Image (cartoon, rainbow, N blue to C red; front, side, top):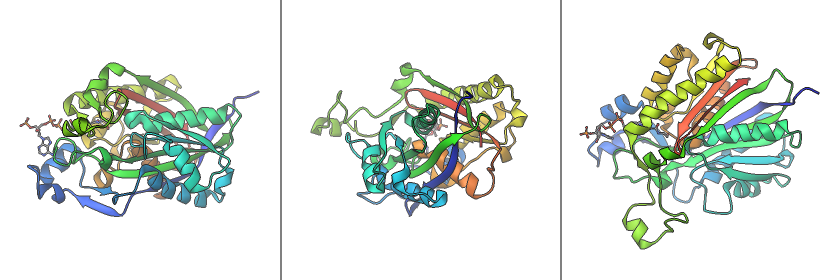
Length: 328
Ligand code: UT7
């Protein structure tokens, strides 16, 4: 019997309405619109209002997805929710979303994989469908990055935004859907990008808050270096390993952390700009939401069509990195 594949049958994305432009930071930090644009490619990003959590953003993206697919929430069998900003320690955001969406027949769980939250969740979702046990798997990438930002740290606060993306996976034939995936972890890179507070090592206390352990710590230059080489290597590897040439790739959808990382990776892959999906200018780095929101926007704008050969790739905290080769 031929192996069952999993294909994306619908996409959705959602960004909260409040838009924050670079001039907001110029008002109180030693930074400029020029620095942010040229060093990161970001012009604006979206922020939630107080009280809006990752599951709320995911809910909106999921509702859009379900409407496009024309099915009800009770048809979903499983929810795989990639995030580094779950609503709370537990229950998982997958459980919270399951309730809010009314997906009463779905089980689900969160995937914590830094900026690879979507790539790892998507590949996990694919395997659930490939196993033959589940027919409709909702994969989410959603983050409220503002929940971990130190708004006085110019090295990090200008980079991130809030948002959510969702894809629905369903059974497909052998030539469609995810053709292959490569995923990596190197835990020795953990010291370069982390949020140390609020977990079992440093439970929240007046002391952890005073030490700012509840906000992101990033050694940007070190992360940058690894991101460029590892993301490019894993994207090239997956194409060549499967007997394709880089010219066969119709669309490359990389994690959106920095336009200079994206451009360096695209250059290493010898891909022209029109084959690279970019939305960092309007949304910043939304962690797990970057790739699914790009996929949704690519579908909606007609840049991504059935039958296209797509490569997704990401690099993030952990270190985590990975790619997937998809026949859309
Ligand atoms: O998504 C998860 C993975 N994350 C990433 O992939 C992020 C990877 N890293 C990056 O994107 C970049 O390293 C950053 C955007 C974070 C920083 O850009 P950079 O070109 O690597 O800058 P840098 O950290 O080397 O800093 C250069 C200078 C420093 O000043 P000095 O020490 O040379 O005087 C920084 O203090 O730029 C300064 N700087 C800023 N200046 C104005 C840092 N942030 C700002 C800012 N405005 N917002």
